Image 1 (cartoon, each protein chain N blue to C red):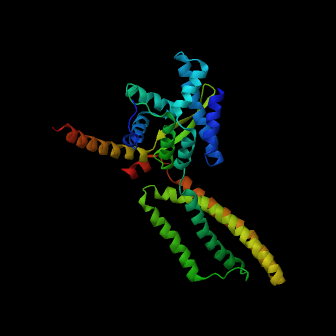
Image 2: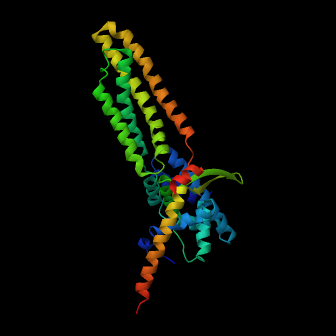
Image 3: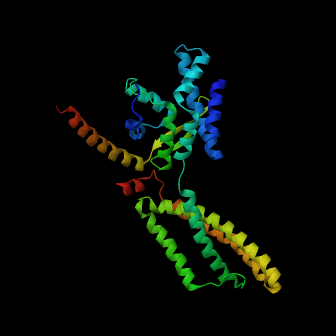
Length: 211
Length: 108
């Protein structure tokens, strides 16, 4: 590929945020430019003139890179993190209840109800879209992974705290540490199973929902 | 011919959805098809197509997949049911809007 075109791709990709997006966008733009270049050569242009014309037709590289980044921005990460947080709080209560460890916050009926209400409220918020259930399960799947990790980390910190304050609580705390990642995995697996039972967007069932 | 950017804004996505409602396309194919159908009157800044495609994909109006052809990997776009619904409503909106503007401009 002509150096002009490689330089153009470098400039464009320099302003694209996110490694994966940078790689896929580069592949896609390079394919486009290669084909345009080939067509211009076939039209009788000299290689250098064809390369310059190709990049001219693509427009300003930095503007393109910025627009590509903007176009790929979505709130999915934020939603997943929020679900993760809700599941994390729920997990802490659950683990506290199972292990009976005093180092963990006590299982509290009022707090448990709050978490349930928050989760249900989120499901209702999603109702603006007709693909609600599918989207909800996808968010839960990613959220559960965040939650498992955070709960494991939090319990580890609590283990160290308990070792300093009350050596007799160490056994219970270690048991809790084991339960935490299992909780994350179970949530994630449940979400994955539920998702696999839902129709894919291409299926007739979803099409009917949309009509 | 260079058209006012403001006039074009929003119409590119309808044209893209129209092409994708007929067949899956990759980026360069869309550009070529738009050139052909407008008899080269409509010449889009080629790079500008990609943010439009990516936005449609982020909003789940289209989906994409990579396919190998001639030893090269190419990204194809496919319209989703959500995209088809959007296209139908945009097409109606455009017909109403252009009809109204034509009536106003055409009147003496």
